[in-house]
Length: 136
Picture 1 (cartoon, helix red, strand yellow):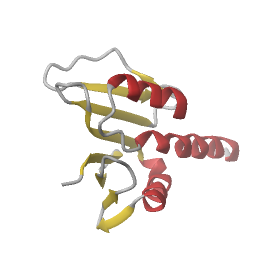
Picture 2 (cartoon, rainbow, N blue to C red; picture 1 turned 90 degrees about the horizontal axis):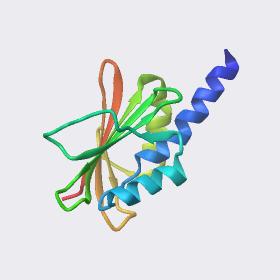
Picture 3 (spheres, helix red, strand yellow; picture 1 turned 60 degrees about the horizontal axis):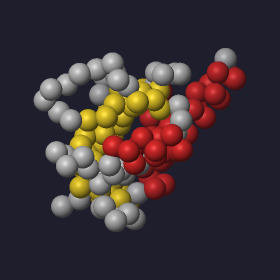
Picture 4 (cartoon, one colour; picture 1 turned 135 degrees about the vertical axis):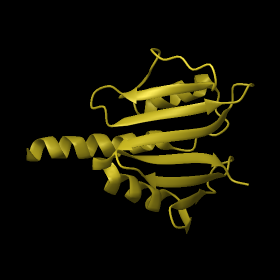
């Protein structure tokens, strides 16, 4: 059991990298980002959505994470929605506090990249959500 917990914690921590600020990335750049930085996240092709244009990445090995990368009509990332299993809450919050500036309750700011981002954190009954949107 202890070994399983350690494996899940390491997988969870590695996966937090994939929730980075991808604003402005093209679909090709997003796919390359995951291939290099988080190969456990796989581009899902078994879904269809006629309302939104997005890429869906899932953690097929552990089913603990799903990341939706929403694109503009010109194929540039306009927002990222990362959803995590509740068991990863500590790792998610540690990641946010370590990498971004907390601005108010459940909101962080990423000023370190060319695309500034507002990062909203929420905890629902079944999962955690981090939403990356352009900072206004």
